[in-house]
Image (cartoon, rainbow, N blue to C red):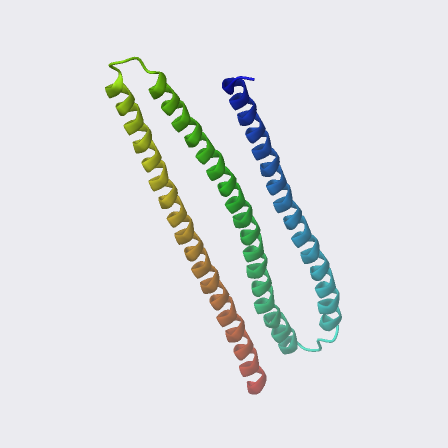
Length: 192
């Protein structure tokens, strides 16, 4: 078998392996999201049953206000935790897909480099400058790709940092609001 058909078969096999790995990664992420949502639904149903039982024991409006304000903070915490879990799952899938893409691109770069090398060996006499220009262009393109990859990774890190900061600020605001509502309810009880 000649080298060209073997290279084509190798590329097709590599592409098929990448497709299978991509599908497996996406399915694993979907499976994690379904599992998370099932756990959240089960926990929510249990909490609703408990909260409903507790709501029946409330006797006056001040107790009702305290009960309602007591629900705010745990609800905000749970929503924040759920969002974090979803983000972690999506970020994990995205990271795996990025790794697969990097491998595929590296293989492509290697194949192009090999083709250029093969071309340079078989190039007619006097075409050395064209081959040098081709190799230089390939090196420049590879350098540009590496710079873009590095910038994309840095942007993803900044975005994650900003998301965490926003989540923490939201959690603090929800906690502060719940504490203020609880203090307000206690103040009204003491005045009554």
